[in-house]
Length: 113
Length: 114
Image: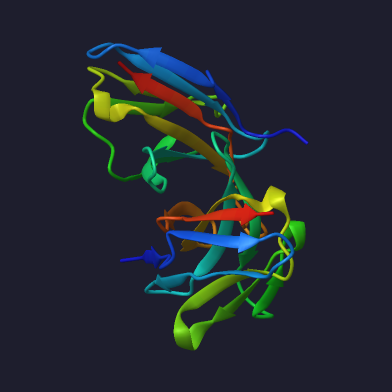
């Protein structure tokens, strides 16, 4: 069975500070990993994805994530957050070509001035 | 670029009524996935279609049914609505085959059952 754990329910960070969101997954085969962002009342926007190759992937809005197979982790990072980064972030795992994703419970990010 | 279109964006229904949610995938996408996101919850997979046939089924109540039509749009039919059905319903579309590595999500339909 596949599952995703996001240990942090809520993170508060100051504008301009760095941000790291944790994601651990459990998957029986080669995992395909995603990070989505959701603003209040809005849909899911893909930030980045990992399938293979370089374990450090770059996404939109200045985000990056690092895949660590030994730790079953896919943590999301941003060096300097902006107030517009306040949102909910979901990590998800699936299989290539299969869009049945298992999502983590999400991490809510609050950005303080 | 065209995106996944869901309609309506908002829907208010009373208990025991029925509701129909529609999803129009990105052109040339042949797969559609439906997700339900309850308040403060993560999205949960409901059901999926590939080439107009049901391809997978998740935690979809028996009161719900769905289908994919010849033009690849999909409809989620919900009957005997309950208060607990209030949620944001997402549709995602994708294409099978190599190079198709991403599902594109619609903006969702927010269903409120009163």
